[in-house]
Length: 246
Image 1 (cartoon, one colour):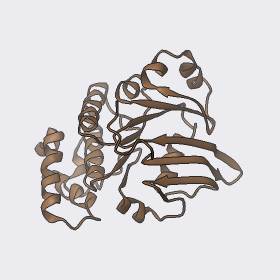
Image 2 (image 1 turned 90 degrees about the vertical axis):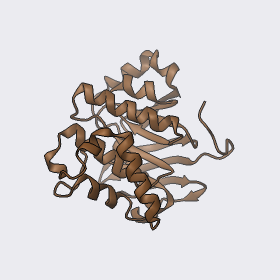
Image 3 (image 1 turned 120 degrees about the vertical axis):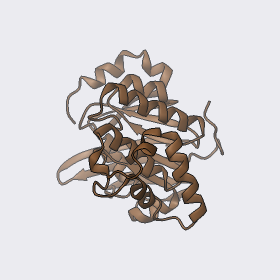
């Protein structure tokens, strides 16, 4: 069971959130809850609204309706920097590391909102322990690393903000299967350490092995939710993946 700090209050509460891109309704009243210490997977086809939901949580897009609360505080209208300072880190799809900077410099930028120099140095060392390949590449520029190694760097950089909630968007996209499994081993280690995560991942088996619970989105709506164990054996999950683009 997840380590819930306050079982009565979700760390993240999303209530009937809608997002429009012009005339297109990307999210149509999505609701979910996530408690401290939990890992939740967001499943569904490309275009189902999963990445849109993460961007709404992190303030990169503004919902057209509904509410988002983090640790009891409404964040619907908060700018992205304030949301980071509240403790939400977003590791976006496509890595987006700073290619001309070294691994060490990328990690320091991940801690840009922090003032605790000793804590930052400690967390840099922790990232090197959690992701040994980063220690080997410490003085290399990110653009000399493989796609999978860059994904590990992007994940480590997000963790450098010392988040209360980590949003992960397709952490294995474009990554070789062997390294994909290594990424999820690292995520499992973070879970054991109590990191709260909301994970978008196309590899359903990897996602459900990691998660406590999951929500399945289809064309901007939650069509199924439950424990990872229940959904792993539910034929309706596979049917949702056959629904095409939303």
